[in-house]
Image (cartoon, rainbow, N blue to C red):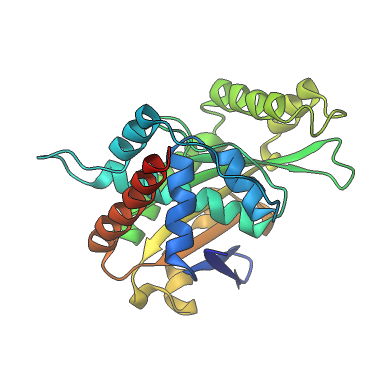
Length: 266
């Protein structure tokens, strides 16, 4: 598997995990599939279902490579953000087998939620929580968390962006209707209108200095004030990458090579 997740709990503040890349080549392959629009194929692989690799059309490969390439004169932030969102999506499936997670957007700098997950009851008949993701590939994790992330979560706690949240929830459920035929979409929408059913997940890149338990707890200080209530509402994920931009450049190049190799097989 490409990622190893180690659970971490910080008292009543939050719960979550550290992500460690255990197989970078495998991770690049999975991100390449996501860039090609093959999220379902990645889910099957993670579930250990043996599936034949789909053919890679030249035009599809071209768009996927564009997604992973920084245009001349542009900053890498949008590309790096998309890559981290793809990794975050993989981590969500690694953390919870069979997770109901919205597939990643194939658009750089998409203005919607970074990611969403629906949690179901044990009978898989009712939605008990919607988890809203904030994924940040950054060299300044604390300022990003205490600024953009907390402000975004506060807005959701005030009830802002509810039409968008309702629409996204409905779309996820409609995409999984065959898998969960007894789920009622209208009931699920009613559930997410309840404040305590909205859970929050922040995932952020850190360097080695911010990855011990003390520094990690400080990184997410204030989470319990932003989203009060039970700890299960507050999920905090970290992935240690000491030289973020340099690593992203190399990883993107490796992912592009995967796509080019598959394209040549057609």
